[in-house]
Image (cartoon, rainbow, N blue to C red):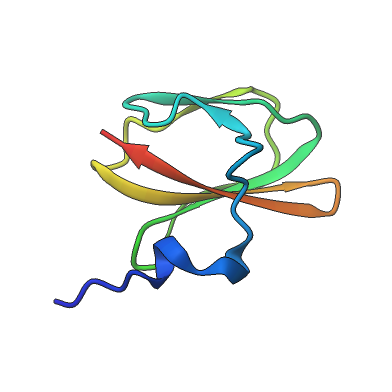
Length: 90
């Protein structure tokens, strides 16, 4: 199996490096969102597979203990904007 590093280094994805919208990172069991008016959240694995999706949510805490250890891409839709950030699950 060949590892494709474009998932981690593609500048077109638009990562929110300086404006992290969740904490802690890395995380083991839950992340807390720091963004208001979020209309949807998606989590992708390093193969680009959608592993979690939630369209509408009111909680600022998201349980991630179901995810295997690894690197993920978290995408949040908020007020017409799409934010992306890497998540390390341990």
